[in-house]
Length: 239
Image 1 (cartoon, one colour):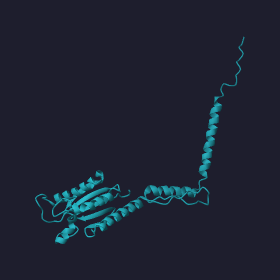
Image 2 (cartoon, one colour):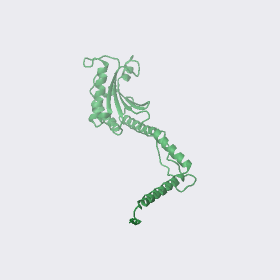
Image 3 (tube, helix red, strand yellow):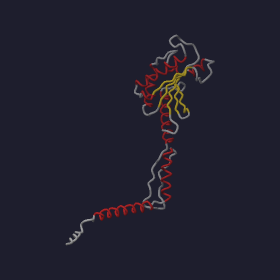
Image 4 (cartoon, helix red, strand yellow):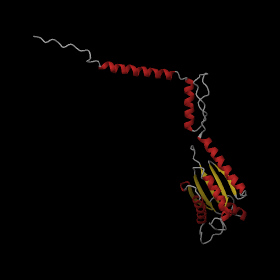
């Protein structure tokens, strides 16, 4: 006798309905997103791309746009200063602070502040800092160095302390111009670090008599060449 087939209860094989419903939901969400993206004005998108490109390349711009086609959902303008603008603003600030120190202590003839390419350079006459062929700081100049150090502590830059000498007489303690230049730059660097300037910012460079500002033919010119320079360095293409 043949068996009667068991009738389906209707609950088996219905799992595909759940999967189908999930798929329809995802497709609906996908098309909603497509619609949202399609509503972005082409000109707005172009300006957004231009703004981001300018910011990443360091050329700077102001935010995207004030209002596109009178739309109520216009993009708010926001400032986007470039790397160059930030760098120049900082350089101007510290240059003015160094100038104020020079004026306060009456050192117009002893300190020269210049913009050396990307960098800021503070040249200090060695006679003002040291005595004779010495590398010992004058007590009268320490307060000036403290104030210079306070400016350096407000920035995060590489700072090179350069020692320069004139071609003049030497003493046994410093048998070459490099010995004297090195001792003087180290003396200034050590004082700045002892007064809170970060050690990792500071390096020293002994140039001896190799980079004179004037010919070593008169005492006045040799006085110009005896100097310690504080060089604050900035990077090309970076802040």
